[in-house]
Length: 260
Image (cartoon, rainbow, N blue to C red; front, side, top):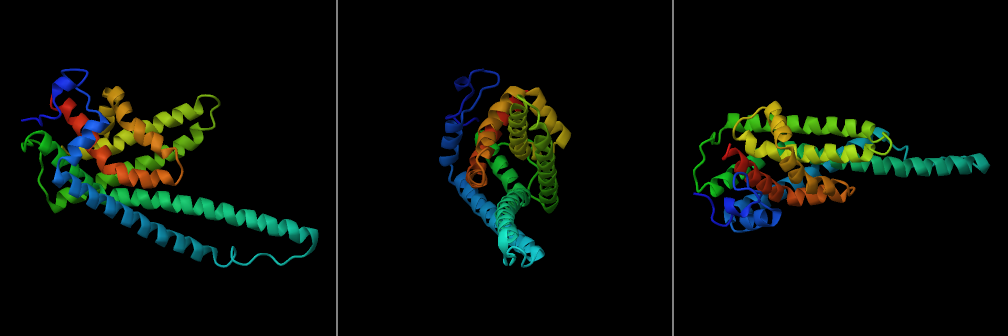
């Protein structure tokens, strides 16, 4: 039995309704189980990201030694240029190393917590379906390891997308638009991974779903992609909103799959 607050007749199409983000939020807030699990995942993602960031910056600072802690002692005009060059290099190094460390730490936290988000997607589908879930695989060590592997695959795809985006960004006029599209569909792929993992879909099948339902995928990935445009703050917002986006994507994913 489908949750009465989110029914097929409310969507733009009776066959494949669209569930809005506010309705997904209401669905999440009305379930203590989903809300509690979401808060736990936010805490775990934040803690793992911060731990990874601290250790990564400590490692990088250790590799650079005292180079950025002791300014050059040359005097005269040459010493002035050398000191300002050293200062500029120091702040560029700090900015790039910190942002990179934070991004990679979040990516690692995302991979490590992926079984938890798969569980959240499964619990969401169960609540939506009234407790009946035909595709459920059950909780097992093997299942958790599979979810971890799939999460790492999505993380590697994210690194590939980042490299491609850096190259595409140099294309005049259309480059930035193409980069935004790349991140939009990659964001959708991240969240589609959770409900599809319960069905043990391969990475290729997940990507095929995005292509087949590209209009829906674009809508699912649009807001996460917009958030990623804000430096540093983007990771904090994504950590906080990840559970909501997971529930939102799961609801819209199963409205398609349950009617296929």
